[in-house]
Image (cartoon, rainbow, N blue to C red; front, top):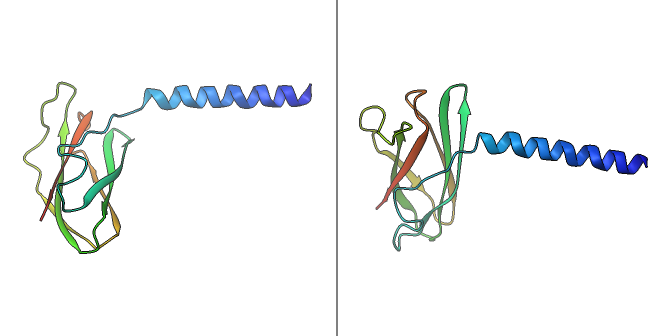
Length: 123
């Protein structure tokens, strides 16, 4: 009986945790195909969260080739209606060594941001 109560408490806690997480989910969006041509740079993961009122996104970029790749990325921040927030974002350069991954991170310029697009250009 004691095991049953412990199991029931664990299941209830897991269910409440899942409900709390689902409410804050943010759907990630890419503004380019998953694989950037034959240049071998892929977005492996995207994670979004809110730091207070500000939307923050982290992306893992992986170079699947043995040669180094120079890439440029930027995040476009959108409000609830899909309108771009802020001025034109600058492209940020990164060097991704062969068969390596890097993490890039950015925060929205305004608490009005509710969505984003990751744009990537690989040389």
